[in-house]
Image (cartoon, rainbow, N blue to C red; front, side, top):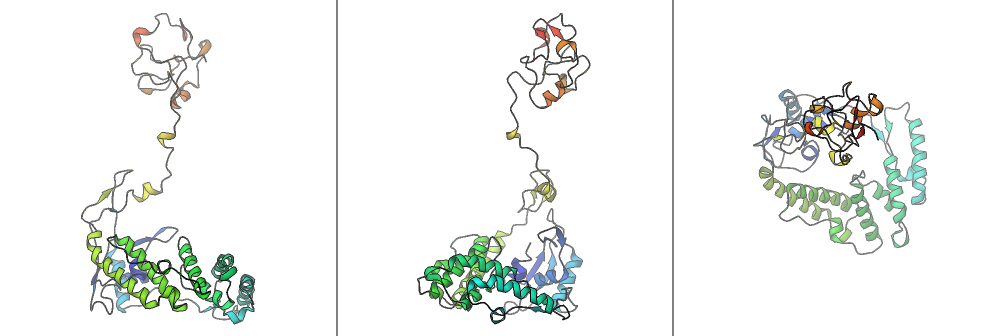
Amino acid sequence: MTTDVIGHGINVPATTVLFAETQKFDGTEMRPLRTWEAAQIAGRAGRYGLTGHGQVGVLGGIAGLKPFASLVAAGAAVARGDVMSDLPNRKPRLRPELDDLGAFEAVDLPEALTRWSMWARTATKTEAMVPDDVSGLVLRVHALLPMLRGPLATDLWTVWRLINLAIDHDPPRKVRWLALARAALQHEAGLAVSRELVLPAVPRSSTVQDYEQAAAQAREAQTLLRSFPGVAGLTSADAAEVEERCANKITELLPEAISLSTAARCTGCGTGIAPWFTTCRDCGTRPSGRPSSDRRPPRAGAGRSQAPSSSGSSAGGRGAGGRKPRKSDVGAGGRQDPQAHDRADRGRGSDAGPPRSDSARPKHRRRGRSAGGPTGAR
């Protein structure tokens, strides 16, 4: 759960890191953490410059969570440098430079990047490297092109710096990237830029999640301001100060926010789960049936017989207790009605009116006929 937040995020001055779970959802499936992932999280205990030492362990007794101490021990060993990590070896990647593309305007970049990619795949076939995937750069260019009009039209070098900013472009972060890009374009055009658009203020009396969001926005602002200093009158140092203040508030609120004293129960099956979930994994992934509110209401006079019948049949084609129809349950013309049971299951029942008690039934009932006409007739 903390692979991204703790492993790659805020520098929390923690002396102890406890693993409540050693699995993560990687976008496709739940899988155990890899050793290098566990090492990244374990390495936050006693982080250099914040605390001088640290301890790592597992947190037990939480319903629905089962950390594996052996995996945590292996990650801690990697974090200490005692053993090698299982981080896969990757080949060097060949990345394009603007001068390699031969583009003259921003509108030329998508085609130029595509041509470069085709050339790079051929050029690196016999080399110990692989070409970088430039599809993300192409998507960013297409997102920027509608803004490059009027006063925001800019030079090719500015566009190249914007599409290479190390800011997440995948939804939902794409909105944030576009906002920062527009702010940079406005700054380059000499237009005023709102400070809150680039660097939101530190939240007041908020939750840990609010401070985490503000810290993430401050990190993105730092990235922008290192390439475009002065946007909204800010510097990367201003954004770093906001991130530090958010980190301090998170450290202050975290002990109270993480309440692990009690376990929760799945609303579907009642199984014990972690307190921050509402359903267990099985119930959360099981296809839900048709909600009861969407079912067709029974027609007037429909329903199941609540009183036992002396003949064992009911007006809706079901016996006492909702049993299946017997041979005595016959329809119009004295013939057995095979659809009587299905109609009752659909909540429609019979059109013959509400079920009658034994005393109200005609005494001369024969072969499915009564004084009022054939039963089951429509």
